[in-house]
Length: 102
Image (cartoon, rainbow, N blue to C red; front, side, top):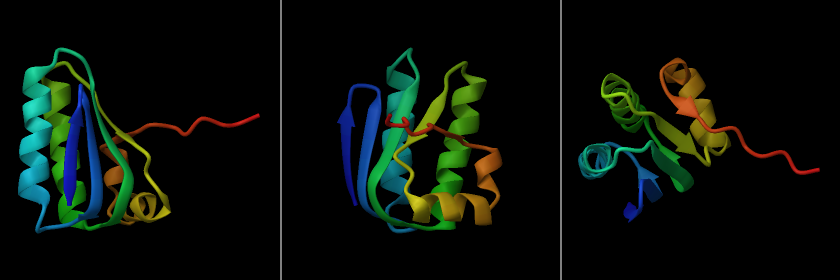
């Protein structure tokens, strides 16, 4: 997995699974602690995701909320959305709506 920080946005790419959760978790919490604005986790280039990775995102969302911030997931493809629904974690995380083209 590759993790790139761009301001308050975290760009993830590759396989987001149990092997990469610790690194992603640390990067998310670094952003939450380092910015007074909301944090976005961009999953556009994530090829696969597992429930452990989604739980990391759900816990980080709750932590951000406790601190008065928002953590938003951007670029959730069909595989990510399917896992969010199957795990029922869609109820916990905030997913950015895709812009509708005219």
